[in-house]
Length: 152
Image (tube, rainbow, N blue to C red):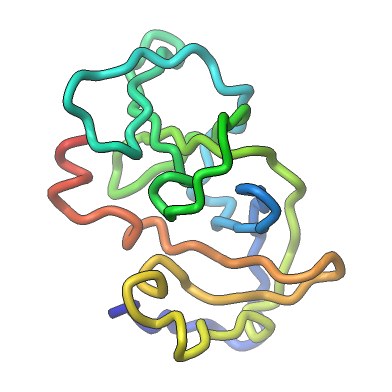
């Protein structure tokens, strides 16, 4: 079950927005370390289907996860990457494109509707309405189990 996130009333957050297919997702800017064109990825044998492999980021080996496969909405070949910190580990998230950074007041982030609070809802902090539509804000700490994080 998704953890209820306590938000300070009136506090604003910066969210890095990106697209997977036609849908817009976002993560807290404080978790994003780098945005880049997806470099060559070295495939790993017997890796989970959503693990594209590893990339070299200035001499450091970083695992790369295709979020479209993880979410079951495979859109083809991602071209961009976001390097994020998940439980102290650097992970590359393969996405289609980065759209923009928005500042959202924490009170404008709605909890996920009851219909998505099951398996898919565990990855979601909330949904924010912005000028261009909705942004599904992801909970990166819930995106992977502890075992998956250790394996990455």
